Length: 367
Ligand code: SF4
Image (cartoon, rainbow, N blue to C red; front, side, top):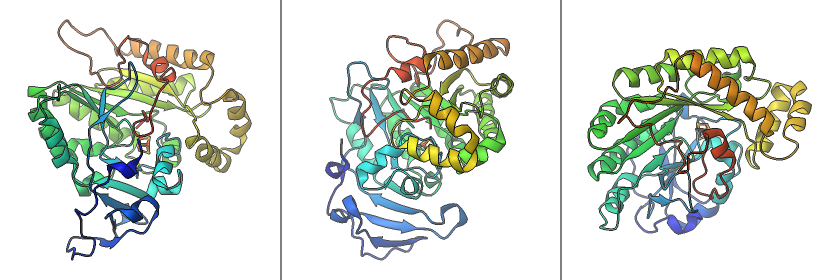
């Protein structure tokens, strides 16, 4: 799916006076030059250097192709992500917008400003079957921009009112802003929440996920969600070879996840597909140059670490999870959140590894 067909022309007047914070101007960049996109900048520290491309989308409900995709439907109100994770493999999708996968992905954020209203319309169609909808599968729906644009409340309300079960994967503690809405939604539909925390090592976090809330804050959010009666799983992803994969680090991270009251933990080892790979190696060379040869050797066969390595990590996390009381079978009637399950029941790490047909608008990102 290419974006050029998803933009509406003629609904936004970029020349009209805008009294809200930030500045607007018509866009003359690549794909967006042909649409009525407006670009906004902010002078606040958190947004300095970033540009927000405000587009009006024709559709926000994406059907994931393939015979047995991990998710049937997804919603991605943003493209690009200010969380700036070096390894993010959604980076490549930014090139479909005529942006680059590096700095542009971090700082040129596309915002579907009409996402809630378009979604309400799509969910009202008689043909809608209330299938599960996953969010956070491409970029993070609770990235910093959401603090300003506030698209998620309208999306959550629309899904809940239409009887549509949904799940959210995020690194954003901003999700707590919508806690009352999520609690209300969970009264009507199945709500699966997951926080991504690859490691609690703060020295690694500061350089590799520079725009995200700290792992400790993310785990605090897990605790808050658990205390509020909304179970939250943790996607322990990505586990970075030679940086966050020692037995001591894995044990400490799993212990912290258990301590936070997570309902489960799912490990995923770093994968380096085109788009993320170049960016990651550049960062590695600058930050941990001695590790470059080891990475080249481990990933010599492609985007994924070899099976023996993945098995070793998965087994270790599984053992630690057992020791700390995580991943116990749920009582009858209590469903696992559907966020990372794939029909057919493959183990999560392998399910991601074997996912064959990820499309260009909705790849699973370790958000
Ligand atoms: S991994 Fe997730 S949080 Fe990090 S940049 Fe990518 S989409 Fe954003």
